[in-house]
Image (cartoon, rainbow, N blue to C red; front, side, top):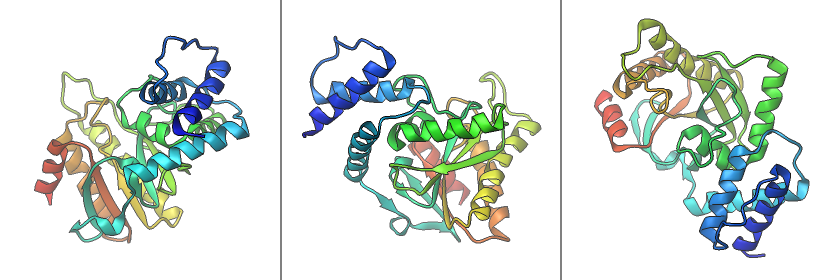
Length: 255
């Protein structure tokens, strides 16, 4: 089965499951692959057919290899036990990557949205939404800001995903002290959970700086200070993962 046939079979399954009409979508691979991501994004937690999962995992794992897996040893240190890398966090082969989640913890339901939550769930596979739903159903309430949960990473090269909800800052103002403390708590919660699970490496995204509007420079200062405080009494390899040249410059200046 070629790649186009594979993704069309995946789409047929989700279109039937979701009762969606996509007859106007072109038959070429790019359009069909875009449709598949969009369908993944809107698919609610549900029981998934084993054959569907086998085909989904075949596609996603092949795409991970094609994007190129980045190992910790490929990234130079900027400080003791701290590395800085600009690129796609779903390429990192570490014990855990950090996802900037929303309070529902189920991933982003906006089709093809450019947030990191969407990117991680789309690359990991629909199993990630299902296991997050199990956690949230058992919890019985929205995830509080500043806490963290851990799940398997499924089709990602990392072993686990640490999900944390950062503070949301209104675009018209600067964060206050309480919101700064909540952002620090996101990093602290992830670090403590990683230590409890005996993880050796964690890659942090820039929590709250995208859709949640936390000023990037202040967020980086809090992130670095919180991580350095933790590393004073703990051993863990940390990667600060950035996606833009601006954020890379901010972090390099801090080191």
